[in-house]
Image 1 (cartoon, rainbow, N blue to C red):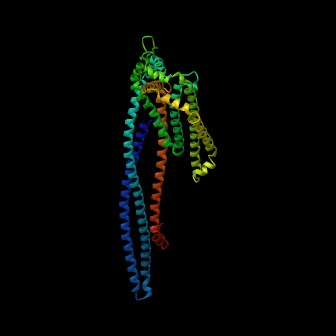
Image 2: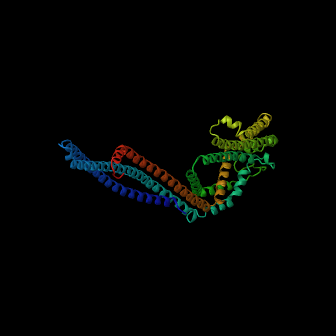
Image 3: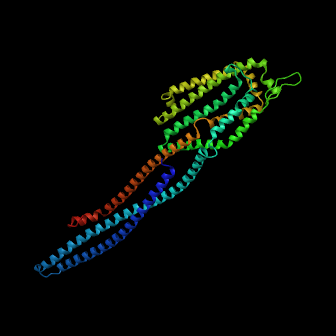
Length: 465
C-alpha cells in the first residue's frame, strides 16, 4: 500500500519536474519575446520607409508637366502602395505575435510562482509526514516486536492474578440485593454508564453531521486520525500496565472482612464499622431499595429520552441539509415532527418517573440520597480505581488487538493517500483550467487591440492574415 511518505515524495518529484520544465519554457518564451520585439521594431521601420516611398511617389506624380509622363510614376506609385500595405500587415502581425508571447510569458510566470509555493509547502508537509511516520514506525515496532509485544498477555495475567480478590474486597463493602433493580452497586455503575452512553450518542450525532458536511479528503483524514489515536491510546496505556497491576495487587491485598467476636469488633477492608453499619442499616433496607428501584425507572426513562434526543438531532441535521430554506419551527412541524413527538413523549416519561421518586415518594427519595451520602470517600475512590483499572486492562487484552489496530491504521493511511491524490488532481485540473482561461483572455485582448489596424491592413491588400 502507498504510504503518505510515498505520496508526498512523489508529489515533490512531480513538482520539481514541472517547475524545471516551466522555467525552461520561460527561458524560451523570454527569448521569443526579445525576437518578437526586435521584429516589431524592424517592421515599424519598414512601414515608415514604405510610407516615405508612397509620399515621394505622390509628390512626383503631382509635379509631372504632362499626363503621359506619369505612366512610369504610376507604376512606381502602385509598387510603393503595395509594399506599404504589405508592411502594415506585417507590422500588425508582429504586434499580435508579441502580445501572444507576452500572454504565454504571463501564464508561465504565474505557473512558476504557483509551483514554487506548492513545492515549498510540499517540502514542509513531507518533513512533518516523515516525522509522524517515524513515530508510527516506533509504535509499530513497540507493539509487535518491542517492549509491548506481550501487552495483551501481561494485561490478562494481571487480571487473572488479582481481579477476583480485589473485586471481592471492594464490592463486598457495598450493600447488595438479589433483585437487580434494588442492587446499590449495580445502580452506581449503571448511572456512570449513562454518562458514557450519552457521550457516545453525542459523538454519533456529530460524526453523522461531519460526514454530511465534508468532502472525501476530510473524511479520510478524520478516519486516519482516529485510527492513529486508537494506536496511541494503547501506547499511552502500555507504560501504566505495571502501575495498574500494582493497584489491583494492593486492593487484593486488603484484609478480608472479619465479623465481630466477643473480644474484637468487626473489621472491614476499607470502611470503618460505623460506616459499614450506616450502609447496611437493616431498618432502612426496604425503603432504600424501593426508592432505588424507582431511581432505576427514572434512569431508564432518562436513557430513553437521550436516545430519542439523538434520533431527533440526527433527523434534524438531515432535514436542515435537505431543506435549507425552512426554519427550525417549520422543520419541527413537518419533516421531523415524528421524531419530535417521540422525544417529547420520552421527556414526559422522564418527568413522570422523577416525580414518582422525588415527590410521590419523598421519604424514600431522601433515604436513598442519604444512602449514597453514607458511602465514604475512601470507598468511592477504591471503587473508581478498581473499575477504571479493570476497564483499561480488559481493553488491552481484548479485541481489537494492537495488530488489528495497526492494520487498520495502514488501511486508513492508504485511503487517505487515495483521497489526497484525487483531491490534488482535481485542484491541479481546476488551477490549470483557470490559468488556461487567463491565457486565452490575454490572447483575446491582443486580438481585440489589433483588430481595427489588422482589418484595415488586410482589407486593403493581399497580405497573409
